[in-house]
Amino acid sequence: MTTVLVLNGPNLGRLGSREPDVYGSGTLDDLRAQLEAEASGLTIDLRQTNDEAELISWLYEAVDTSRPVILNPAAFTHYSYALRDAAALVTKAGLLLVEVHISNPHAREEFRHTSVISAVATGVIAGFGFDSYVLALELVKRRLR
Image 1 (tube, one colour):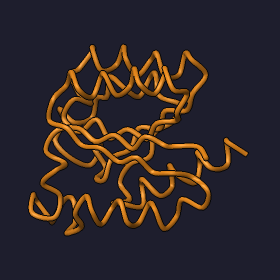
Image 2 (cartoon, one colour):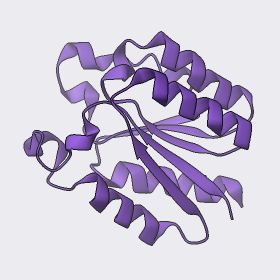
Image 3 (tube, rainbow, N blue to C red):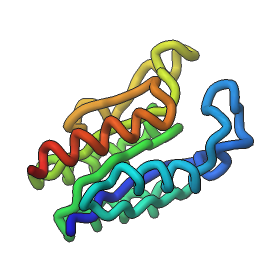
């Protein structure tokens, strides 16, 4: 059974209480349950960290274990070239890496309009709340068939 790494960056551990008008009222546990319900034959390994180095290590793990990645880099989206380089390793290994965002960064503050990750991701899905993850999972399922 294929495992999909669903990796989440800083502050996403506060989902449900952090800016519910932007990110909704669902928690990471709610997201996990929703993805597991949609997984149909895949294993979901959902993780969250506020630590850039840990997130980079998880991307290395994806390469070493040949696992597809759904990545919400959160604030690291806009400036972490180290994370960008690790994400590039995933796609250069021929693996899927779908960048997701709960909100639409282009409809928010100008500094959020730039992603250093997007250019190395397989694709980007943003602005659909938790459905951004569900759509990314659907893409992973289609590509693995």
